Length: 209
Ligand SMILES: Nc1ccccc1C(=O)C[C@H](N)C(=O)O
Ligand SMILES: [Zn+2]
Ligand SMILES: [Zn+2]
Image (tube, rainbow, N blue to C red):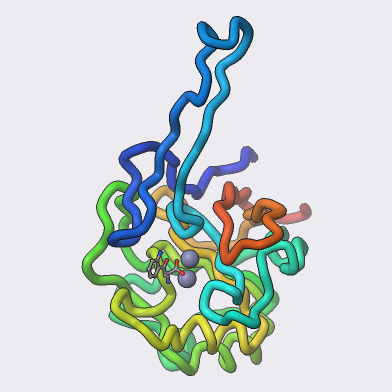
């Protein structure tokens, strides 16, 4: 069984949050200029593409990316399809088997990495306590935010982190089935940062593994 990429491709056409820093890759120096190598340079918002949030994203006193436990972002994860719901709270998730997994990925709708959505399936405030009780420490969504796009209070972000649930955003789940997988989605060792791009990959868990 091979690893499957569930990351958005990073290129100059990827969607960014409105008015946020566009993604750009360019050659700072070309091979012709250096005589030996191409040297690329990227500019991007840390919330573009598949990425994790650190609490410092919404809380000035919150932890930065370097402070987050790398063990959260690697290990067994369950993918469930919640695409029939407009928003997700304890009520919707009560119908799913969440036992025995500490990472949960929600498939809400097909992904288009090149168009910023105008409406998304979001998580409601009571989600943090509910997921904590179920033993979930990482929630992944296939949209740019766990809160509504126009949220200012970031209620779901707070609710999740206040209950030890870490946030992964903009995964691509169109080409994978609900079920149990191994997940790796490590942030970069960014010391000052509020978020980090990740390469998110999954591998189906085989019986007997
Ligand atoms: N890039 C932004 C620019 C302005 C305001 C919000 C955002 C966000 O990214 C929020 C989103 N909930 C996030 O955590 O990724
Ligand atoms: Zn983010
Ligand atoms: Zn976020």
